Length: 306
Ligand code: AMP
Image 1 (spheres, rainbow, N blue to C red):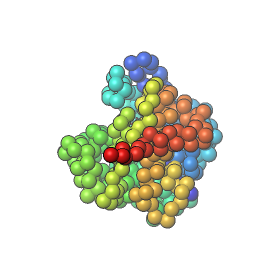
Image 2 (image 1 turned 180 degrees about the vertical axis):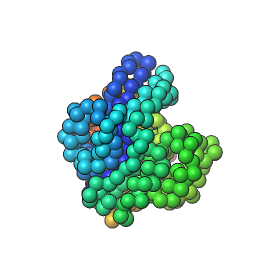
Image 3 (image 1 turned 135 degrees about the vertical axis):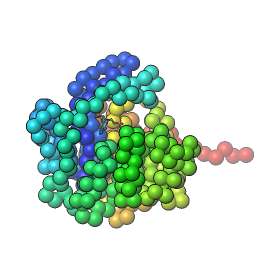
Image 4 (image 1 turned 180 degrees about the horizontal axis):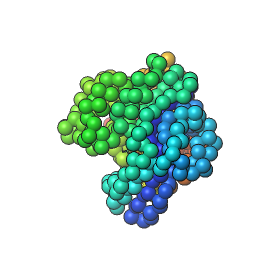
């Protein structure tokens, strides 16, 4: 089964306290599509300018990402620049150049409308709506978002929530969207806005999964060296969506999602080990299985006998 991924495709400039790199392959859809491709076929919907390096297009193709939905138009590719603080959990956006993104209308290539799993990676909620308008009865729809849209497009974001099965957002965004400080209450309040499932990411502290009357807390892999946290959220969402598609369940349940958030966390933990998507270029299925087993071991414990 395949996943349709729509989102941004970018050239990023990223500064950490240790290093700075310019014009890296980035964007929510780039990270999410490559991450999902470790588990399932991917139909990519996005836009780039005619300055977008061919090597990046070739890389997507080498991951068997279907590119019939990739628009290459005259102009410059979307550019984003961010700087991380010492804890690598907080980041400031230094600049955003929308470029070809400004007039982007996502269009589905022939056959895409029937894709059963949909990941609306981080882009303007209006564009996420536009993609959903074109889909024929998808089986499971996941949406990601960011603080910017809660600030400037809250109404469109809230109306999207009643159209999706799952929302993924980080802890700060969950608090911002609901106005409550407790993440548990925030997760429940977001469910009440529409999605049956909500995943709240907590950076290096893992994530919380909310389902109908169920709750799961997934830890994060304790990495010694984090080089670039960019795309952690997008690779988490992509891995989760790709894993679900690979399982091809008639109905997605809380138990399926429990496993999917662990696979999402596994891919995200690899992604932050290097800048851009560099670590994913050498990632193997064996690496994924090994780290999944480590996650399992880390979260098991026995009740101490009296
Ligand atoms: P994350 O680290 O998961 O929050 O995602 C980082 C990626 O989001 C970067 O590669 C950026 O290119 C992309 N990005 C940043 N701002 C936006 C935006 N306003 N719309 C879409 N993508 C964005």
